[in-house]
Image (cartoon, rainbow, N blue to C red):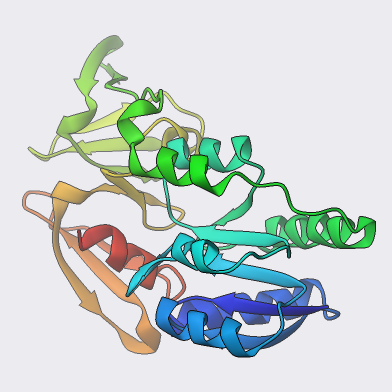
Length: 257
């Protein structure tokens, strides 16, 4: 099965290619396309692939524009860092997706799903017009993020505004650090549970131990092997948070808006 990747971040594209090779060697990546402009030229001169992996936000535009120029019948898997409201839009409109950084097990399921579509020779039914409307108008999507957290202090409960939280950490237990430096134990079992109720436009899961508020970031330092070290603003400057090479390009896009 021949596949094409459309992704403007070279590292992410190569990582995705390697993961595809790992989970299903029968999928051959015939081209990695770095921009919308190059994609348009490629599809003018080449046959449609069996499968397409496509980032949404490219450096020179939104990849949906490609679907306005070409009628593609192959299964499309979007790779995206969009938040939960958009993910619901993907589900409703019959499109498959993978959240960055891509998990190999989720990738395997997506490829299997696409293979089933191809084997049945069913056309891909996806309402891209409605999908684009949903992505363009997030205020129309019903989404509730957690506005307060209950913390334990001297055997009492105390509400804390989410906007006052600089970061969430996984130590022996889960804690929050406020912008004023105060630390409180959090009554959540895992940071995965915390991440699900946070606004992804404000909070980012840097690694297994930290979720950070965008307003708490002081500096970001590139390290060896394209990794990053994030330092938070005073009085939480003691935190130097490492971020993997794979997450770095996605984090940069999240931060640079």
